[in-house]
View (spheres, rainbow, N blue to C red):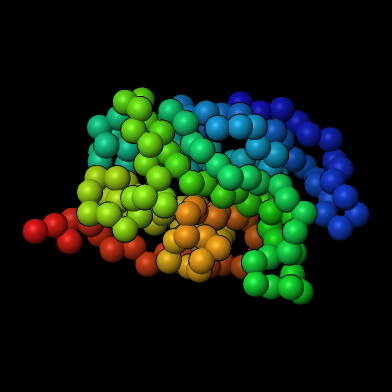
Amino acid sequence: DYKPVADGGSAACPIRDAVEVTRVGKAKLSKPAVMTCALAEQLSAFEGIFVQPAAERTLGSPVTTIHHYGTYACRRATGKASRMSEHAKAHAIDIGVFETAKGDKVSVTRHWNGRDAYAEFLKQVGQGACTLFTGVLGPDSDAAHRDHFHFDMGPWAFCQLNPVDPRSLRK
């Protein structure tokens, strides 16, 4: 679910071809999110191709809410004083928690390094994201991303996740 957003923003961080998204597939967003149409399309594909199947497989319940920490923000890239963030173009989203119909809240902060179904779910959606988004950062990337996934549609291709399959850690 979305509605068009008028071109705007600021001189340093213009917004073009953007929408305000409140739901992707079966999952609502925790708050409305302004993003480019390209990011909205990939986020919707991500929800249907990876999030819901992984949730059913590992958690036994669909994801009903995706909690995000923001999309559009006029700022520089973390650790890159010379380059604007993809958030400055409404080309990125930061996701921290996936909430299921059973009421489980799967948190990147609490569950990424676990050895359970929650960790397995996060590893599966993180790896899936690497096939759809141009840029993916997560808890293994740097301290700034320790509590969330960063997905973007920028010009640089990278996947900075180092997931370990939690099934290999079980005794």
